[in-house]
Amino acid sequence: MGMDIYGKNPTAQVGNYFGRNMRGWAPLWDYCRSLSSLASQVKNGYTNDGDGLDAAKASSLAKTLQDELERGRTSEYIAHLEAMQAEREKILSELPDEPCHVCNGTGKVRVSETPYRLNEQNVRDFAVFLKHCGGFTIF
Image (cartoon, rainbow, N blue to C red; front, side, top):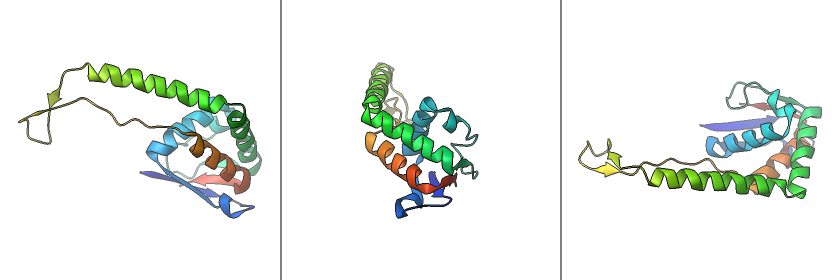
């Protein structure tokens, strides 16, 4: 599943559209919510229900993200997430193998998960989109 975020009244081409699959969107939106009560005003930020922010709120969120990037706090946040993920992977590696349902129980498979990752470029791209979108809607 992907998230398609459309600018309501873009002031530049980059404000027309921002799209990510859930592995890219969920950690980005989690980060936005951790920084700003504006993002928390979007009740359906993880669904394609047409929720979003108006131009003033999107612009304010863009400024918050840009400030966090410039101050190095985004990289600190990402480092913390990566450390937590490494700990989860360590715990998972210590669990016993489980029956493999793909091979009809004839073998075993390692317990694993696919982590959702955040990176600075994703944050930077979203901040630029927010600055120029004139408000946005999530579809």
